Length: 235
Image (cartoon, rainbow, N blue to C red; front, side, top):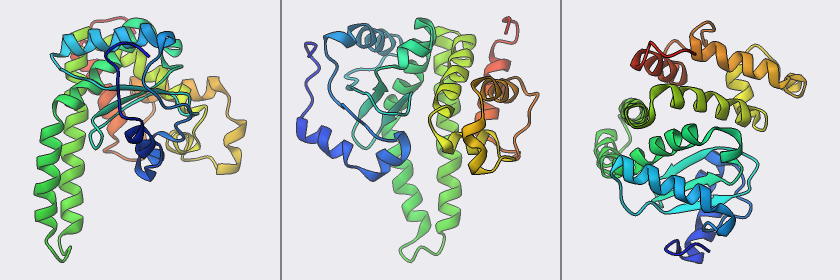
């Protein structure tokens, strides 16, 4: 264990058994505080933490099947697959970590938003649909804001390129992402998709040459905003 990375074991077990977390990131095999073998990742988190201006980011690593990162406001922890730094360049890794750490910085806003939306829904749930729509728009805004923070800190091109690589890697292992990327395919066809096909589709969404069925697609809009943030870089 790296000094200063203590985290209650009971809390780790609670996270591993939380169905909401499992639905978001899949299985969390080997979930633990970072060990000596995770020194490079730990140091990149600390650098991104300092650049964003955050404090006390609790990093947990895992060996689960789904690659990527996720900040969990419910537990105030940053989850990172230990294979994540192998998929992206160090600067891209730090850009994505900065995005997640920005979510931590806005954790209080999320709590207030959930409270407000609960009141909007009403005790009888009569306005539940309206409340969910408001919360979705707010959380979408936070995604855009976190991308902007990352872009200002490390460069929009690094968030843009890193996000593509993460999407490809995740799609290779998660049928839910294949379903999003290839709505025209049947589920029994997913296993025939090659890495090149997945990469080409992700690239198409990123550069705007492929338009998702949903006109309000959040991922496509994130890529568009990143392109507009620094339109002069060579992609």
